[in-house]
Length: 356
Ligand code: SF4
Ligand code: SF4
Image (cartoon, rainbow, N blue to C red; front, side, top):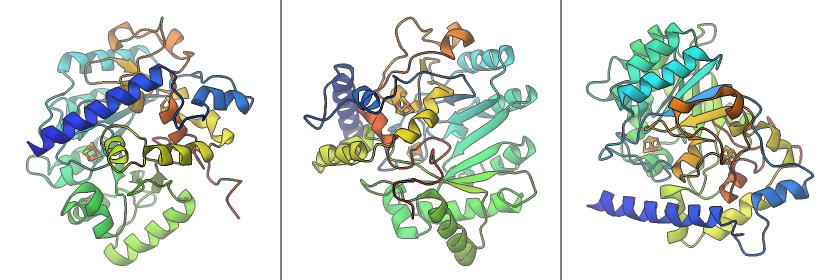
């Protein structure tokens, strides 16, 4: 009941935000839209430069219900990519030279076609990324996953918003931190994150509240030290990601009356140097039903690809899609604030305006 209520509120918040984006409404009042801000910086509208990553969101089913989740995922969700759609994804990969398949969710491992997708993409010799919440690796029915991932040379990108238990649990739920540490130990024991094994384990940090992430390289050094000293855990790299005002996080901002303040922070921190590296320019996002989007955020806001573009994986057209105009809105300020933010972490190693 509680979850249903939360879901309805997040959906309503998303729908209103999407409507205002599509209508080009400026918010906070008097502030430029994202495209106007690009223009003020002498930059044109965003266009794709190719498709280096096919990111598939295989569904909204998850064993967690994190407070900041932009997918509004949870154990009661039923949306899951079917085998038919998964096959269409593999057909596109086979017929193209897209080097990377990035699998996200929900907890993507809970999709019944997850292992099949990994096997097929690896058979095509593509790099495969699993965006993993860690606790799923400790759940009944999934405990052999670490071995499966290692056997198929899957890169693991794992969420760990803090090296402190209380901060992590306040965002992701009671007990999540301890189970995440257990999962990281399992991954380390298989060589994940250990230098010279070729098994890459990246951690993802996102702020607990309505603030921007700190500088990535500095935070990475702190994570490395704290996780090693406290838990004897190692990892390959840290990605810092800015929370975008979508779904549950948007609802939280609205409830606490902080939406305009947060948007203003993102607008004030606009950094034109990040624009070249925003992820939508080199990736294409696919939802659980096979619909195409510029990124996972546009997917959650239901902002379709530009008019005239193929809208489903079945109609995939590499030439058209790799130079498409990208659909933007004020949520995009989240990708260009400070050092920038993407699925690979900060766009810039250091912000020349703030680094000393
Ligand atoms: S943030 Fe990730 S782990 Fe948390 S509920 Fe959403 S999809 Fe699940
Ligand atoms: S939210 Fe970010 S990745 Fe998505 S379209 Fe906007 S700038 Fe691109």
